[in-house]
Image 1 (cartoon, rainbow, N blue to C red):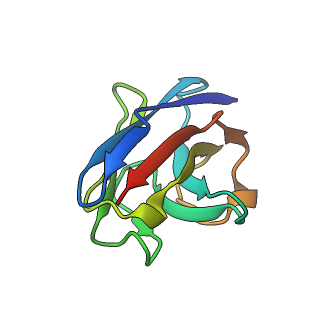
Image 2 (image 1 turned 90 degrees about the vertical axis):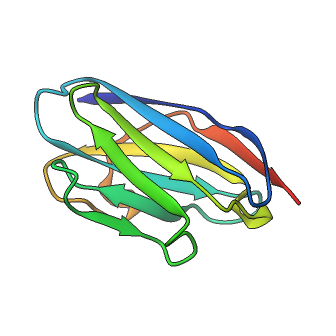
Length: 124
């Protein structure tokens, strides 16, 4: 299995930037894909972005396309989420999730391993 831990959340300003990291440990010698999801108070968990094992394929929710960028460094077993042009509606708990395999997935129920989440708050 893969264990993932998020970091980098905090308070940002509208129009500003934050970068989240997702550090993986455990069975990282086998291919695994990573997705980011978020959940705002009173709302359902939603897909943000995902990246394939090779990093060649990425998917983004329409709400973040052009503003957020996912990337990965397999040598460091870390996936990054660069968030630019932040909006107050980006405020949520952000979760990193992993599943074994090479193909990125966009449905939360296709991921087996979840981090504890990191809070991102964007002030207007």
